[in-house]
Image (cartoon, rainbow, N blue to C red; front, side, top):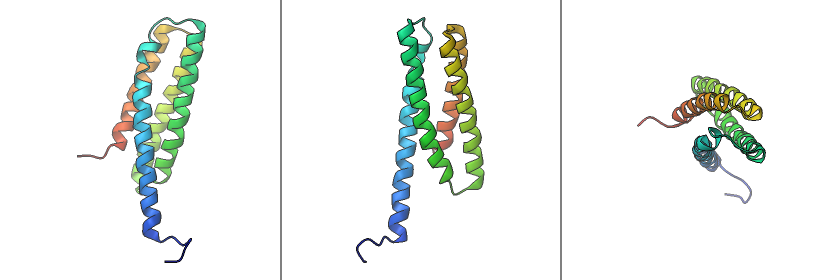
Length: 131
């Protein structure tokens, strides 16, 4: 094999590793996001609300990037559509949660967090291969 020339097998291995990395980061970020519940359901001071909002936005951004990669590289069109639908549901609920955090209404935050958590669990379940 010539230096600088990659064969198809190496390229598909790299993509497989990248996909596993994306799924791993999605699951890790999902766990972190779900663990934010305690912070979101208590009355916080102004600085804490701002930190929670920023943390939520940051996690949503990482999830968006990795989910986008997973969806775009899905070989099955049906799976791609299902993941897109679940991801859109999750990001919609995340936007609603962000608005609730901005409003600083604990009851609204609780409700929106529950919707977001459920949507996120559905996304993670769809990424987990059946056993």
